[in-house]
View 1: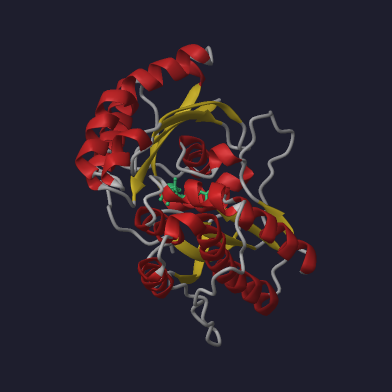
View 2: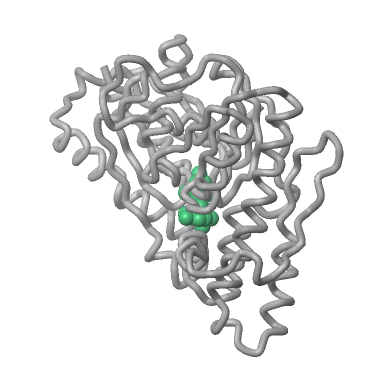
Length: 338
Ligand code: KG4
Ligand code: ZN
């Protein structure tokens, strides 16, 4: 049996069929990057309109391409929090309507819970699930979130620290906008940074105070702005600027993670969310895991950015525990995962 999952919390329309081990039978996504690119960021109203246009055809295509029928579906999972309210509503109303029409249970899923569990998705069938039942650390870094959690039993989430201002992905996107590199910025910075020198420019890193795991990227962003203004031709050194700026973000993220590994003596961690696609973060995280003798899982690249498969896995686990949502469930644009 498969869970049909729907994700429309921001600008990606994504649908998937997933089982409770994390096997992704099929996933389809309609990416809106090109539509939002001229604005340098997501325009909520445009995102909502595109979800409305794309969602049902995508679900039909998902069923026909994977040769699945509704009898094989055990429930419907949908992101209902947090996110852009207009975008969330499209997914939620569609899920509720399908649940009523096909008499299936449905469950509203927290988007960040999805990102955390995305580390355990697999495109190949699984004998045993990949997820850990013992406590692990989860660093979730995306366009809207930079959060560090301890995850117990796959269902208790304790937030150790979060960003005090911009999220890591936002810090990438704003820098890319300053440099005129296009949207989404993280991908462009990553691509250029490969050819640059990480030590060419010294960017400030917010210091870690004792027992604090919070992040802050606004100082870094302001300092990049000042530096770019002061350079005669920033475009001539864009590779070095990208490499140095990226290094500051990666360093800040992994410093907090390492502090948690040492202080809490937790030897397993995942790094997820759109920014976990960053090549430098991935290689430095592998080094950290080796240095601290930890087990590490980072999602395959297609599961780093927003996707429905991660929502499906969370939904499948909730449904397995008998947890369903009422048909009155509302979208929650702001919701902490606790
Ligand atoms: O998880 P996601 O798709 O959406 C949110 O929930 O926010 O994350 C999108 C973010 C964007 O800020 C984008 O610039 C960033 O992930 N991103 C990257 C890379 N790929 C995507 N940042 C750094 N390096 C990348 N390779
Ligand atoms: Zn996300």
